Amino acid sequence: MPRLDFYNYDDLTLFVRIKLTDRSLLIGRSSDCHVQLPNEKVSRIHATILVMPEERYSLKDCSANGTRVNGAIVEGETELNPGDRIYIENYIIIYQPKDAPVEDLTEDRTLRG
Image 1: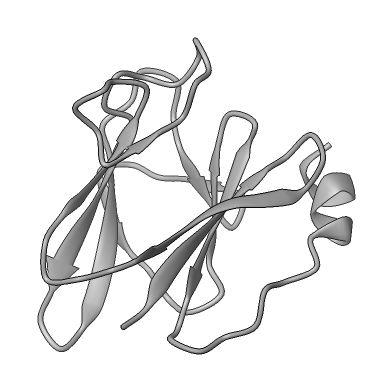
Image 2: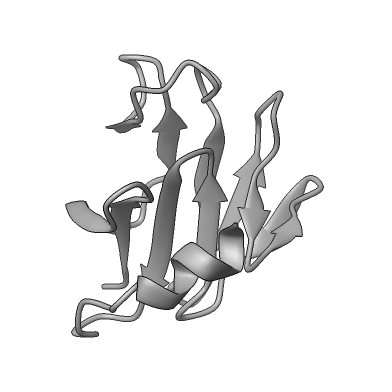
């Protein structure tokens, strides 16, 4: 199954890896979310990863402050492709196919700045 790798932008450390399943995944500040991001600028429910046919996934932005995928602002919903980078405040989330290695995010620091 594909996965999401969650990195803290400040020090580029991988802090959680989530294997995607056949269920939607809530990302946000709320304790009701599957993945909690402790930052006051993150909405209670900031984004949802939705399941699509044939082991594909999409991201739905549910936030007040916006979500970016590969630098572009998400308006509504967008399909995720392997290697896509999701930016939520000071977090970088990478959508990975199964068995992909952990990525070096050194150049992401300069791209976001």
